Length: 345
Ligand code: PBG
Image 1 (cartoon, helix red, strand yellow):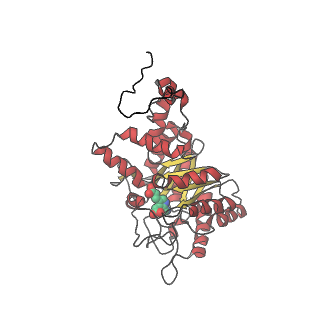
Image 2 (cartoon, helix red, strand yellow):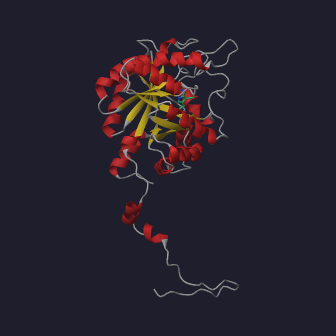
Image 3 (tube, helix red, strand yellow):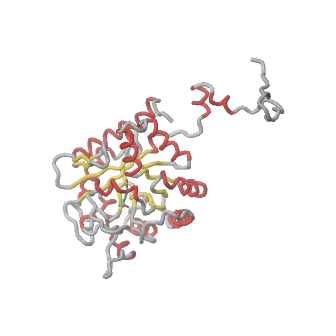
């Protein structure tokens, strides 16, 4: 159609020319859009967090995380196989022990629930998936903190590191390929690297929770692990107001030998993720945490959001911000949608 001038609106400036630059050309058909897409996600970049609980005979639904369960070792093996079949890159294991105490002694016990689960998983899916294990004391302590407490009840950084070291060896011996220290103790990466290397575990990777913020979005996770926490984690997890500090924490972890640095939560810290991704010499991951999952599931269940569309948009935003990998409770269904071409972003 011939250009039509529409300068008859009173007071409108005359158009100097019709636009020569038309970004809409890149959106004109689905095939063009597919070709022009900047952000592409591979299922291998996804890690599924999984919960294994001691002393249950059947998996238990987690009410705050609809669709997720506390697993028995048997049901854990089944879901791990499903993840592998879907092409998910890894699983990240959280344990819920039957016995809690002040130092979290089940965390490094030879027959602790995480170690037993690892021994069951490695022969089954150890080649297909990167088997990762959470390395933190909060699921194992009766006070629910991520470390051991000193006389006045504060988390003792260096005494906690020694507990983490014992935990690292127990998990590595049980076959974990990647340890994920999530307790935000100072120096935890360097300390664990030294302990692992001194004991012949040079090939066990460290996934550093580098910029982990004290967040309300962990709420549903606390139910998932039957958390005993009273109070909060603000003396060790970061203040959500601080972006620069997240970049500093990540660069410290890189210097201490982290193989991967992570930002957590994802959605409310995309700027931190972006900044870390701009400068990090190692891969940068994000954790789309329990509250991010629960919020979308709840809104979708009410008919307020289109479920798959919003999940895929949220995940795309995290990768667009610079993530190389993502921990997400939606890993299996995302991997399946990515494979069938139904991923909606
Ligand atoms: C601590 C840990 C937490 C999460 C992962 N590791 C809880 C916390 O710091 O309070 C939260 C994960 C989520 O919310 O999905 N071991």
